[in-house]
Image (cartoon, rainbow, N blue to C red):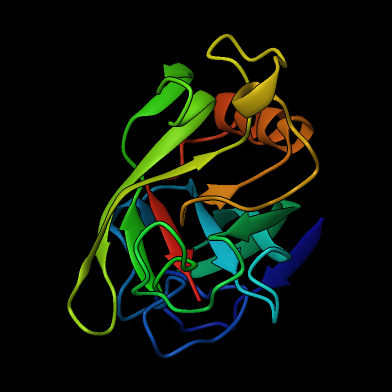
Amino acid sequence: MRTLRSKPGVLAVLAVAAVTSGSAPTAANATPQAAGSSYTYLEFKKGSDPLNSRLRFVQVQRTSGDRTRTTVLDSWRAGSGNGSKDTCATNRGWLPDGTYTIGTYYPHHDGGPHGVNGIAWDIGNHKCHTGKWRTELFIHSRMLPGGAQGSGPYRWTGTYTSNGCIKLSPHDIRELQSRWNNYPHPGKLYVD
């Protein structure tokens, strides 16, 4: 767990890393959640390999006045896409940079043999840099709708490939689910 302290006089939130693309919360783009005493968000940090990036669960706590403490509570290996860095490649490329609204949480999603199954979060649709929409995006793993391992498309084989979603191992998605159940629910996902 890593804790960062904000400097006095800074309103709202300082993120884990300073970015100008609007990826993690800053004083200029903090969400209404920043007004509370504590909130969380998810951050997908792209590495040099689309199949070896990081998903972080981050908590922001107001310590006093306008001071906040930002803590990375957990971080997991994650993949996005099939290895392509083309953010506009439907069902192949990794996620476009930007801010996503985390939608419905599904403890037992049933997308069938070619869809998303088991523990999943809908992260909505997002435009890539050309304006093309990437749709049906999720954070998920590979499992049966009930969360157990099955055969074929329901079995984790150790690969982090997906159709452009964020993919975690079954173990790691259960850890994310535990964080989800024990902390304020993240409303945003920041991708950069």
